[in-house]
Image (cartoon, rainbow, N blue to C red; front, side, top):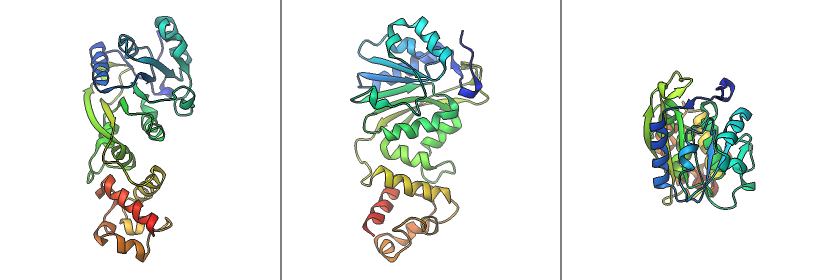
Length: 261
């Protein structure tokens, strides 16, 4: 059996009923032929995904011991097992068209996985992932919430987010010290941001990096902000708000004004 490694953030899901439900929820929305499982571990999700004949499953794991275990127990996927770091791997070398993602994400890189998903947002219409519950709550938090942040804005700008289930620590080996939640992300078809992702990310990060300041002050360091042109384009009330008070649509409007100015 594979030993969970703390430095990889591994907590293997051994609750078979939960694993089957997660896969069923994912398959209900997924329309991609190709699927990538991140952090396949001991195959708790893999075993149910392989029962679906209409998908071509790939799996990536940084842990060599997990890869060896999966090769032994799931020989039918042997040629599509990838030993590597999802955060650094060239996904374009594997997928030419759209692909979806599922995984019991390693908790220590779960938010970084979503930032990588945003890089490939045009190729990834569906994501289903496991998160520490407080992390999942932050990602899905609405504007005005104290936990609303950078990733909340960016993911909500491009994806509709829903919660599938909450799991207790006893569903995992070893049990984490927190509850876990499964989130589903469906790429938003409309409306979508009118500004580029790069511009949106710059503005959102600048605003939240000084979240105690009003936007008028937090964004002064960015070219195009803090001038009369911007103030003529925007309601001054918006500039007097703080980052957590704005929706992704509000940030998108800020970017539009920045490009005009």
